[in-house]
Length: 227
Figure 1 (cartoon, rainbow, N blue to C red):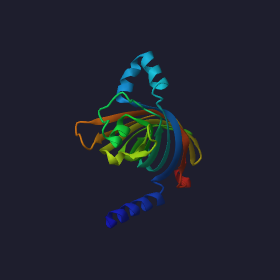
Figure 2: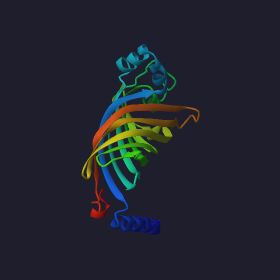
Figure 3: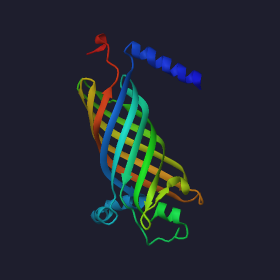
Figure 4: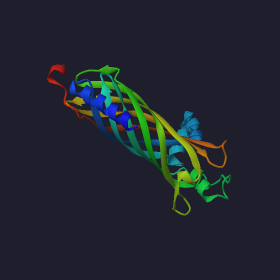
């Protein structure tokens, strides 16, 4: 492992020395909505869309930090995301009524806090001196907790779930100012978790939103490479 890390570091150092690679640091925030699978399927009607927001309060907010290695139009790297979503309370369901942690996780919660780690891949399909259009995909895992609606205590996801994975897709517009870029665009993320006690029980949550933030190029390009 140490040899692999050393080799990767040597490749990055050599490439950056010749202006072949860029290193990007990004910081972003955004807002949107978090829907359960049932809520998302109900959005096809105007009444379903209204009910999702008015009765279930599916608002959400998120913050992202990322470190990406770029080679020409391709970027690959790491992203951390914190996602907060409002209540998704359904006290009419009693499937887990005898298990406080599981009931709070799936039905009786007033807040959700997710902490996700992603491997990111982006490709600049348009790459102009002052503008870029960059779709990207991400995959990883997450942890976090939900706040029980009745008692107000934090219920860790790890107490009742496992095999938590998350995937996402973004379409970012980059407006470039030298080594700094303003980033904005829509995003979609899926969060899936599996119940520890029942392998057939899974929950899917869909996050729809938009971002705005900044991305910094940490390596000054060589003068001979500037266009």
